[in-house]
Image (cartoon, rainbow, N blue to C red; front, side, top):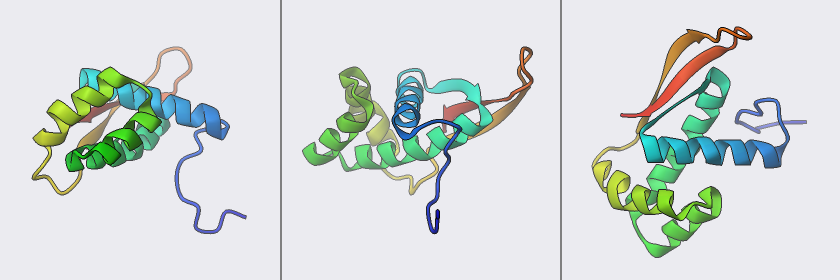
Length: 116
């Protein structure tokens, strides 16, 4: 039973889901926006918000926690040097999801995840 288990499964096993979310979050950090399906965007939004909140702390332990999730040194450096200080006074809501319409090939609902 899934009592009190929240979050998006997005139709994949845990290891693959964590890899996809880390990749989408890394793309968001490096390019300030990423286009994907709506379900993946919502799941990645939650993941990215937590990583940015850790980056706002700015200490070594937070940096190591973020690196353990993203596994990309360049993304972690950019997150802690640029994005974390930018959102220092913001209490949350660092990202936005905007619907883009259906994808031409299969009709999946597309969305753009971007930093505010």
